[in-house]
Image 1 (tube, rainbow, N blue to C red):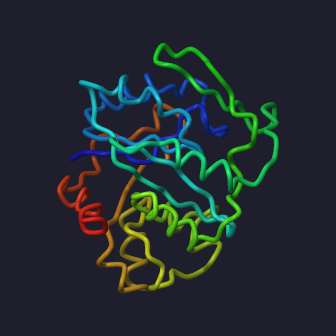
Image 2: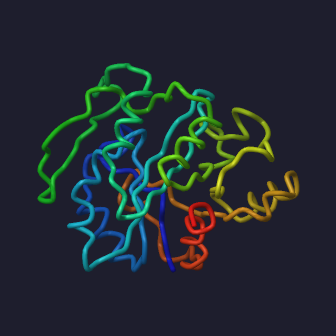
Length: 231
């Protein structure tokens, strides 16, 4: 199964304004991916029309990229039958408030199925939730999601840059890196990671950044993450 499970829409202020759900789905379809996740910063508000737009083209899981108090990014994935409103309420309740300056950070547009702007998020989404990394992972699990440590070796917003270690007792489900050598490097340093599921995503903020069909995973192993944790 070819995948890209870390794609930002125009709701993320750091993304291009043409990152509509239609454009993301169609680009992933053209590139012959099998599954995607749209993972905006601290918000699920772009995902209401995703099932309608993706139908007959590409499979998906719901996603969001959450920033912890330590400024570490975590990808949370939820099955397509998940009710999103309680998760969005959780994000809204804990997001540290700051108004978005769209001229500095960029727009935070919400589109409908026709690529029409129907709303904007006025609060800046590239902020932390007022929760620790451990508490965010626990909350993801309480909401029946899967927690994946994002871009673990990046220079910004990564667990290794900001915490300089990976606690073996941290109860996450998978880990994302940008390159294969980073996986080898991390396993050499933290041998327990060999038992985690590894993800290679694009972290796309522009349409051309969406992955080509080069990263594949076993579909059953992916969904086993839910079966193993929730039965």
